[in-house]
Amino acid sequence: QVRLVESGGGSVQAGGSLRLSCVASGNTYGSSARMAWFRQAPGKEREGVAASYPRGGSTYYAASVKGRFIISQRENTVYLQMNSLKPEDTAMYYCAAATSPMVRGNLLAPEEYTDWGQGNQVTVSS
View 1 (cartoon, rainbow, N blue to C red):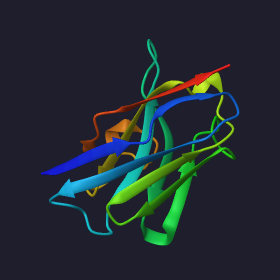
View 2 (cartoon, rainbow, N blue to C red):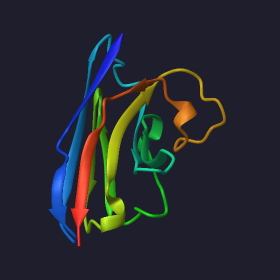
View 3 (cartoon, rainbow, N blue to C red):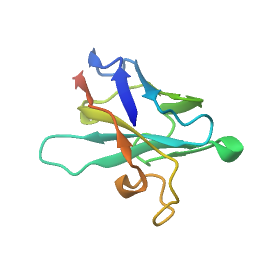
């Protein structure tokens, strides 16, 4: 069983930066896992923010964060560098990972991931 542990959240003013980290422990993936970051604000659905596909080193971003957030992955650790933060980025952020065959081929969809972290709060004030 894999355990994902996030760190690095907190509070920041608009325009600031934060870096989230997520480390997988236990029966880890090696270099074969796709990993991603999701977020969920109160009263809203969980949305995919950024994903990393190890084969070819491809990355994918939601339109709302493209150009501001950067995902990077090193074996069993995934990072999310968040720059130029906005109040609308306020949410609980979750990391996710999987090695199973994809369901629909959408790396930003929650159903493509089997393992989840506990969540880490990010609050951006105006």
